[in-house]
Every structure is written in C-alpha cells, then in structure tokens.
Image 1 (cartoon, rainbow, N blue to C red):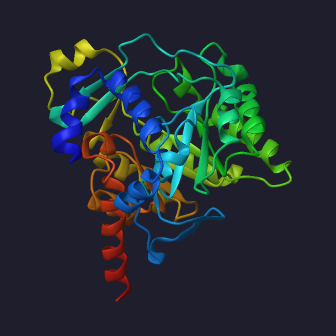
Image 2: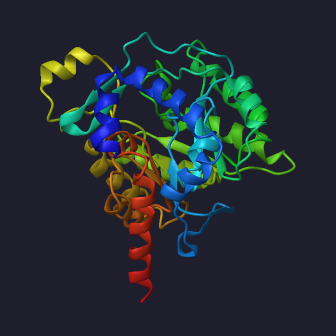
Length: 349
C-alpha cells in the first residue's frame, strides 16, 4: 500500500515538506480511538528470540529508528507503534537553531538515496524535554547530542555537557555526534586528541550521576584506516559503551544519478543504499580489529532483512533505519524483524 499509494503522493512533494506532512498526518491519525490497536496489529512484530541485552539495556528487538527522523521527540509514542526496539531522537543542541537554508533535503530515486544538509535544525534540548516528560510508551530512547553551529570547537564540550545534564533523566543512552558533515568544522572533533578530550569530559560527567547512562560515539563512514584505529583506541581508553557506524557520507563516487544533477543539489551527506557497503566495512573493521571490545550499532543502507543481517554478521549488535523506511515504507521494520527471526532460528538449529 505504501509503495503503490502513499509513496507516489509523498514523492511529488518537496522532501522536507513531505516529512512535515507525514509528521502531521501521523500525529493526527495514530492517536484516534482504536487506531493505535490497528496500527500495532499491522506493523508491530515481536518474538522472544529478538530480545537482546546490549550495554546494560534490554532491547525487545534489535531494530531502531536512527537519529534525524524525530529530532525533537515529537513522535516517540507513535513511532513505537511501528514495532521499533528503540528510538533515537536528535541531534539536539543546547539552543534552538534553524539549521541551514532550504532547500536542504533532496531525493535521489535512482540510487534510493537522500542528500541532506539539515545542519542540526532543532528546537533545542529544553523543548524536547517537555515532550519527553509526556511519553507514554516504554520503548528505549536514545539522546543524540551535538553542539550549536556558533559554538567554537574549543568550547564544544560545554554544549555536549549541557545536553547530557538536561536530558539525563529522560533518555536511556546518549550518542555523541561529531560526524555530521553539515555543521562547519564539526568533523574536526573526530581527530584523536579533540575527540579523546570530549569523550573524557562526557564520560566523567555521566559517571557522577546516580544512574550513569551508556555513552556511544557516532562516526562518519569517510574515516581512513588510521582514523578508525584511533577510534578503537579512544573508545577502549575512555571506556565509553559503544559506537554507531555510520553517519552519512560525503563520497558521491558511487552514485548513479547524473553528476550535474547531484552537483546542482549542493553540499550534504548521502544516505541510502549507496552507503550500505561502506558502513558494513566500517563495522567489520571496528569489530575485528578491536576483537569485539565494544558493541556497535549498524546504520546505513538497510532496506531489507538481509541488509540488517549483513550488519549483524559484520559485528553489529543492533541496527537502525531511516532512509530505507522512506523508500520501503513503515512495514520495513516488521519485514526486518521477521527475517531476523528466521535467521536466528536457523543459526540455533
């Protein structure tokens, strides 16, 4: 139904307009009397074999919603109805910011991909907290945090710590995002010394809480082997709880869409099928070179159960989807979970 009816309607619209239209429609319809049960009956799929314990948290299934879709925690209860095992909000910053000028989100249907240069557009962490206080579902929630555009890198830790302290009572884990290509100079924080300094500060602040939360690092797919080795060393040295691999890529060499058309879209990170191979390679490298020293959440180009299985076999403990859901529809989560049940049952024989 999604591909034949809803997707053609949404794809006529500007991508960002379609996003907000979808948000509004979900908010209005999913909360109508009896609709919740219908939605859950159609989309939600659970099986005990899917349950996992990762960095001290119990996941009812390993398929999560990646950050970027529900930046401001507006649809947590509604998205939970679709069967996600966890939902990651953000990226959130201390102060509200509009992000980059529009247009800043583009579809590449030939590649089943998106280009975005959103620029951490969000209403600020305090506004998100107001909504988090009203969440009814028990789905696990991750808080993806970043710095404001105008905050210089030498003061970036202040922004991350502000978000950590503010969100701490309301989320189950944190993600330190230093890998978006759409905030000027942000990726410089992935360099060895700045990253170590930032993670130590976040780790220490978290450890002083009465109930510390898992701290994860989200990295770019465009890191060199040497930089990935640095990531492994830093994660182990700082004793943070895991890595999310990967964010969007600035590499466009694998796109089928015409060069002139892509160039006309301008700067931005690419997500979708084109990212699948590289993100899996990064997962495999981190897992094998670290001897599975820390959990990895795999994200990038997951459009099917097999894509998710590829990430898990490469060393991921959990997976996240976003662009795949835009192209395949909300039924993707159930398809992945059903595929994972068959895969896990086959392995247990």
